[in-house]
Image (tube, helix red, strand yellow):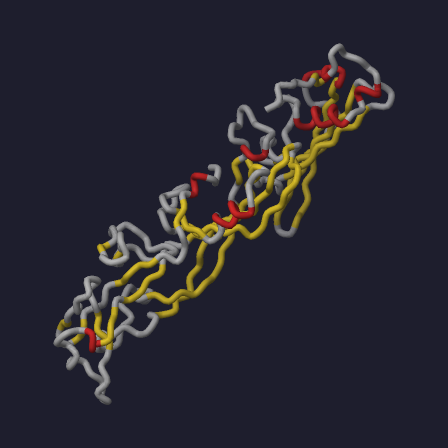
Length: 330
């Protein structure tokens, strides 16, 4: 953060200011306009009123970005009713070029970032913490159990191909985060289509999927950086009752409290002809072998009262898992 501290004439907000509200769609938006008088001579050593020195790009940038916190920060500073500073304008007085009229506008629709330290906000956008906006999305997924938790099998205990398609609602979080200008396209690509390796922001591992819809390079708040738009989709899947593999060969029971999340579930089944000594059981009328339910260890799951026991549910990764906390600020 810049150590420059501007001189605010009178020590605070000037009169007049203004406030208002308007209806935007179905949302009431509050707005405020706050004005300050800044002594730009404080930036010169020694102080001068020479207009050629005062009316400079450096001076204007110092007023808006390098004031050391005595003026609002665009995108960060909030009013007591939650409005965020959305714009700032500095105009030099013609009659006295030493002084600048600085106007800031606040709006209740601009809350998409917050400072990493409310008491000492940093004007560098790459330190800001994004605010997540919430949306919903409907999707269909095939699952091995129905909405009551019953296995999707026929009367002989043989699973239906693919399970059952169930319509579900998932929560979608959208946010923007300012990244260093050195972030490459390869870096962004490595963040697209991934799930969380460990618990993050109160969500269990594997239940979040991150995508990067777009990004743009530019100068934001006086700092060269890249604004990256992210989407995080939350899906629990099923809780327990499936198997996970540490090596791609053996299968162990997942913890009963663990969710399948964005991982893919498969029923552990096999043609009867591969099950030694069992190929004559549960044949169809045309004599073709049916499907054998396996227990997750390559062994037939057995039968109860002439009906096969349900197959084990195996879990595979559709997306790589990455530590979200390494790059998402919270």
